[in-house]
Length: 230
View (cartoon, rainbow, N blue to C red):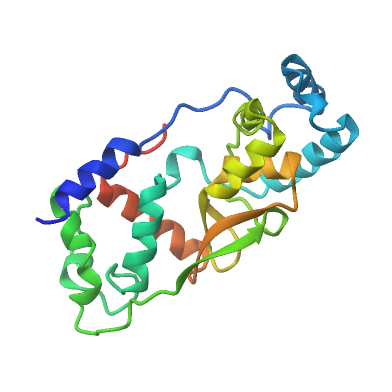
C-alpha cells in the first residue's frame, strides 16, 4: 500500500492531547480574571474588554453540544490531505456508496488506502467531489460545536505575547463547515474570541453542512490512525 508510509508519518505528529483544567462553560468571570492576573496578562488586554469578551465567549460555548472525545483529531498535515481527497472526490461522501462503504468499512491504517479511494469505487465518477478551499474567516463569524473548551488552553497562547500569539493562531489551518461551524481549531478560536475577536483564521472551508462534515472528518481522522481525545 503506497499510502502507509505517509500515514505513519502523520500518526507520529497527530493524536489526542491532554485536556485543560478550566472549562469556559463551568468557571465564572472572577475565576478567569484571577487566572489572568496570576500570569500577569492584563498588561496585554484591558480588564474591562477581557470581561466583556469572556462573557460573550461563555454564551457562544453554550451552543456546543459535542464532547471532546467525539471530536475529529486532525494535524496540520492532515488538513491539507483532507482538502485534497475531498476536492478530488476520493472520500465516499455521497450516495451511491461503494460496496466498501455500505458494508461498514472498519477504519484503521490497514485499510486506509481503500478509505481514501472509495469515492471512485461507487460507479459514479464525480458524485463525491466536495468543494474545499482555504480562505480567511473572522473569528466572530464562526460557531463552536465542542462544548468542552478550556480557558487555560485558550489563555496559554498569551505566553508568547499577544502579537506573536495572534500570528501563531493565524498561521494554523482551522476546518469549518459550509454553515460556519468549527470542526477543528476550537481553542485557537477561543483565544481569538477572548483577545482578538475580529482576527481572521486561515480556514479550510468545506462545502458540507456540519452534521455531515463531522461524521466524515471523524472517519478521516480514524483512517489516518489518529488517537481520539479522551
